[in-house]
Amino acid sequence: MADNAPSRPAQRGESVLRCPRCEAPLHVALDEDVEVDTCPACHGVWVEVLEEKAALKLRPVAFTVDDVRLFRKLYRPPATREPVRYLPCPVCGALMQRRVWGSHSGVIVDRCREHGTWYDAGELEKVREFVALGGAEFEKLKLAERGLQDLEAKLTREVARLDRRIDRVYRRARLWSLLGF
Image 1: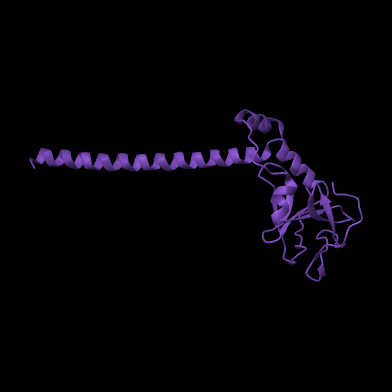
Image 2 (image 1 turned 90 degrees about the horizontal axis):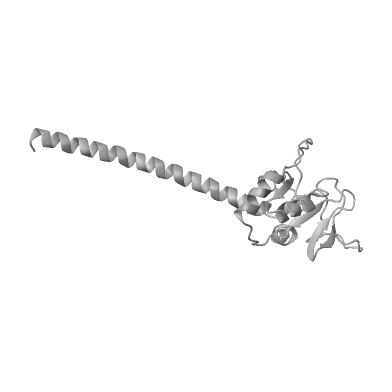
């Protein structure tokens, strides 16, 4: 994961960042040319908001729909259950939101919207594997499918509404013609 070279303490302003999991001081490390803050005790990784795409190697890579469908069949997220514990952001101290990275990766990360994401030991690598297998493209496909389903439902409702209106107008015109107007 991160380089084993000695590193400096991770700081924001005058304060040293601490691990939200075990409270140990975080250290700055390079992870494949991306600066991250790591915990030497529990091996968790703090990734700043602006560095996250580079750390996860998210790029606009083109996958075919068949590749994404194959991913859907092959990928099964891990089913581990741990007690829920909300962690404080190492930068601001506010409790971070827990969320599954992507809706199908199976990796639950802790995220501060303003400052970054905390990955427990091994989670950054799991998310990278998910991305490399086409997981990000799979997520995009799911969003597109959901959007198309929503659009189809709206169109169906609108067509039904217009059909009812046309039917009312037709009946009214027929009534008027029968009455001789």
